[in-house]
Length: 167
Image 1: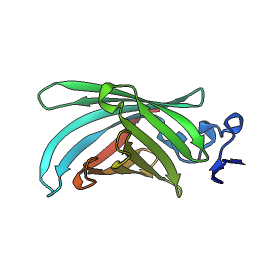
Image 2 (image 1 turned 45 degrees about the horizontal axis):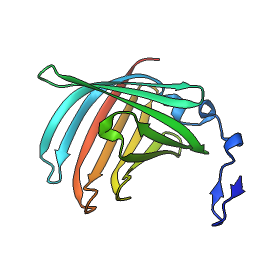
Image 3 (image 1 turned 90 degrees about the vertical axis):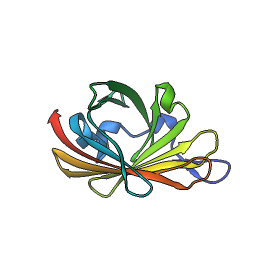
Image 4 (image 1 turned 120 degrees about the vertical axis):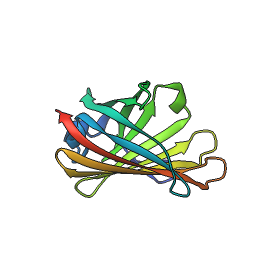
């Protein structure tokens, strides 16, 4: 660990921890299938869909693909790459245009919890906070609070229940 000129702790880039040795992220690798429900700020359901999320660790990177399928048969695919930035912390970036303006950091907490924070790169304001709680090796619950990046006001929330379908 080294200190920046401002005195904050900064990981030495040549000494970054290995993602495979993290305590929680490796438990999330594999294929997960689940139901996603999005609600507005008043708790009214806006939309729902199913998704298969594939998460892997390759060469100390977090690789994630979300395939979302809607009731009308349409589907969307979103890809994300995570880079270790510190002990228990991963910077997640989306390669799709919908996510290019997001800065996301996922941080391990306790034994089975990941806190995922998303900021708007332009405004620096918080867009979302997600908790990912591993209930068992094959079941997890995710909840997300979303905010308008222009004002910081509460926008709505999302609940995701997922089961692991493959390692």
